[in-house]
Image (tube, rainbow, N blue to C red):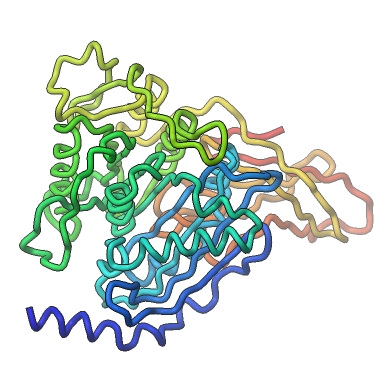
Amino acid sequence: MRTILLCLLALTIPVSAQQAPYDKPPSAVPPYYRVRYEASTKPGELIFPVQYTVWIPAGVETLRGVVVHQHGCGEGSCKSGQTGAFDLHWQALAKKHGCALLAPSYEQPQKADCQMWCDPRNGSDDAFRKALADLGKRSGHPELATVPWALWGHSGGGHWVGGMVMLHPERVAAAWLRSGVPLFVPNPERQLIKPHTLPKAALGVPMMCNPGTKEGVTVKDGRFSKVWPANEKFIKTIRRRGGLLGLAVDPLAAHECGNQRYMAIPWLDACLTMRLPAKTGQPLKPMPVHDAWLAPLLGQQAVPAGKFTGDETEAVWLPNAAIARTWMHYIKDTEIPDPTPPPAPTNLKVDGHTLTWQIEADLESGLAHFIILRDGKPIGTVPETPKNRFGRPIFQGLQYSDTPAAPLVQMKFTDRTAGNAKHTYRVVAVNTVGLKSK
């Protein structure tokens, strides 16, 4: 025990001086707002510096909620949280429901124990709620301090999201746990991880576990092989008590986030539609259960709950038929059908030979790239070669914890072959299933 305490004390010494690589986040000018708190040396408070960035959708007089995108453990993942609020695809989800989009970035040194932030009882719960109040004041939306939360988290962020459900079930509209989950029993291998208590109210919060198949499902060894056993225990504990918990195994990935956003965003969309109150300040609506579908644990087919013949206490819970169909595509190959084209770009401006524009992302399939037309003929794409080593190529790129690549790409194109003639330009958006906008 003395050794453990000395290790924890050692962690606190350099943290307050931590700067790089967290000292150059994207600029936060309206509609973006940011607060940053220094590390604390007081017992029970957060021992890492942390910054929170929030995006407020235009035209929303009173926010209905906040979508929280929580990165995972390690210096790289923590740094990637700095771009989370700038993600156009996640912004589309938030805007549809009149919600803000918030992304924390815990300034954790690489070798520090991330349990000191990903367990919300170690000060990150208090810091998060303080940030909501402070950002509410800065943005002119004081209701940000009290609105419901839709939580998404990766790895240690999944642990944090699950912990927040256990601590504040009345505030959580829905929770998506990519790879990480909280524990309900002591783990001899990780003595510093404190088990959570499962309150009855948490059973009414829709949750989804989302491990990669290479995290112990089909690949039984390696660094992340214990992710699935932890998920399985969490799922069985919740489901045996009647909790509204699903499982969506990523069939292509290990610990990276892959194509999960094409399942997570529609799922959160459905939950927010059913749970957010009509007026800010009212309690969350109970999650409807009469249209639920069920599937066997690690099964491939879901059916209406009334037709399910397996063990319901261990079955995968899905809120309705539409999500069940999406889920069946996702767990097969992540190729979720989308028949609707993306929104068209807006506010196209030409300054000399340089074009700039704006857009709202396609809620279902995000944005892959833009096609530039001059006098009706294509002359280029932005980006020139869309890339994403973790999943489908997307316009903003993708970091390990499902956030845009840094530095942020711009909606900008310079026509270097225009000459002196006058031209007519158009920009076409293409989503990640290849559909083009008007």
